[in-house]
Length: 631
Ligand code: FAD
Image (cartoon, rainbow, N blue to C red; front, top):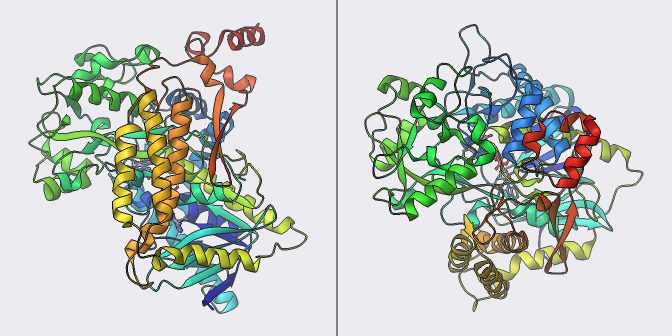
């Protein structure tokens, strides 16, 4: 028989990024015995890589900012496809979550009068991103970890054990959720180092596993982002929404090839950097879409004045939402006006002093110096789009983070959840999302566990099945290598389900994904269970595959272009499609797609917009409703 280490918890949090840590803190503060599980080392999550900052309408730099303005910007950024309630909660609660971080010990950059400083970012009307240079995520994670340690110290004093009520299991991958009927009963996985199995029995599980970027070759995401949480949710009977919407960040490194995709923070543009093509032209002025025309400068002079006098000038078009900038770069390169390595130029050197660049963008300075031998204080960078963030994710109740579908006791927060960002996320809105909805999911998971009359039980055969699935790649020796399969998957997704999509290619992608599914089912990994990355990838592949199928299917279905989904054959944004969420579920092994109407925005929220703006997004019937409402 296979040895399995068993643990019992009230709440198990899968993922140790910002969302997971904040959820775990909340569950532990509610008195629950809480486990935090992380696939990589503790502290190494995407959250730690976040550079620009956390968006929160504190109004420190421009006192006109407030939650209503932030709500409006978020809905515009998401092209009105956002779950309005999530956008509302996020805009209202972000400032409290940032101030709370200070009480945990976070040290943000300051304004002259000693308040938390806030910087400009794409799509945000006022300076709004609380930051620590360009290393904000590091401070966020450091602070949350420190809070966890302080809670462990309390438990040491009270119970004689640091691990009494909150324990971290790092380098541990969860491969399966276990159910008792339609209720979560636990989670099963393995220690990456030893390959030993581990079973958590728990009535409540919070998914906080982050994104899916590793299904694409050019990506800012690191190795652990294989859509595990998305796939775990699907297999447990939950649903995913908005999976067609992926954010291609406009500025990833394009040279040298070994670092292609690594992120160049938007702060470079927020702090004055501009995009130029091979003719030296600042091309973004040619790409301001109608819906944004009123908010963006028409001349370089006006754009440049905005940095010092934002009240009397409009924003530079380099700070349009990311989907717009990524498409613009794509068009310039396609038109033959790209840089030598196939990107465009991002120039801060000619716009700010070397001192200022080194002070405000220290990580970028080092990143280019070390990886590309480029001195960004004297030369432009070469940049191009990179797969960065998934807007789609687990369909959740906005207030509690409880997953929809046929499962209870499952919660999701952070990038793995869907709805909040609609069809496109604004920069900086993720870090605040993690804190707001991490706290909510952790708190609700705790009260769900409290409310249960009887604990769900883990079935023996479910554990045996999980063991069998996990060991299968090691026991086959005729299958293909997981690395070949991952490359093929990345080629399908990058070539056929990338930034610009077409019907024929998407249909082709689905055929190829079906073939890949057969091949992945027979994948084999050489070697044994001790630290074996090939085996780990073999297990990740089935997650990447099912999530990619959701993306391709939804992308084929949605016949319009909106945010992170661009259809060359349907270039317009269609008000009728704005009313629709595409919902993915699993029927056996097959991905099912259904349409579901978006919830209607409450009157006082829709009333925050002007009719002229709503006219760009809503159907005629919706506009008639709006007119009746204000009449
Ligand atoms: P993550 O921080 O991604 O953490 C996921 C956790 O889940 C990890 O601990 C991982 O090991 C674990 N995990 C995954 N699968 C499993 C499994 N099967 N079993 C166990 N554990 C698992 N957003 C902003 O708002 N502002 C920014 O400035 C910004 N900059 C960014 C820069 C970069 C380079 C990148 C990549 C992203 C940036 N983002 C930014 C986006 C933001 O960082 C992420 O969306 C966010 O950190 C996601 O947080 P999370 O808590 O949901 O998940």
